[in-house]
Amino acid sequence: MFFSIVWPILLILIGYSWYLRTNLSFYYTILTILLSTWSIFWKYSKIYSFINIIITTLFTLYLILNKSFNQSYNKLSKKSYDKSSILLIPLFLWLSFASLLNYYSI
Image 1 (cartoon, one colour):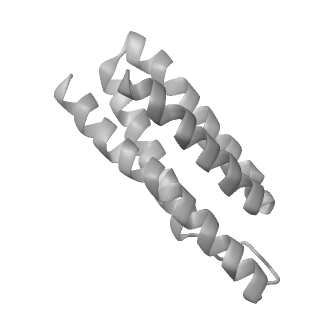
Image 2 (tube, rainbow, N blue to C red):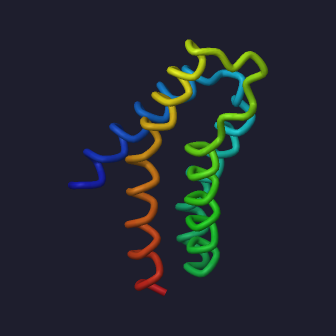
């Protein structure tokens, strides 16, 4: 029940963050693929799913901390980058919690 509430909220936050930083579409696509493949890994190998979730967590942290890809980094873009980074923090926290659950299920 809890998962069906959390994931739509996280996906909306990811989508809006992506909208604010369209120049990082390649990285958001990789993030989406990593998030999508976790359930496949979980079905076949819990160790690979744990590795996947750790990589996804680190990749999300990279997107939160990354501010160097915008060539014209002015006040307006800084504001949207900061907001975009803040929107990804709930995903990072959720993935951190999920990695603990995944670790203890191995």
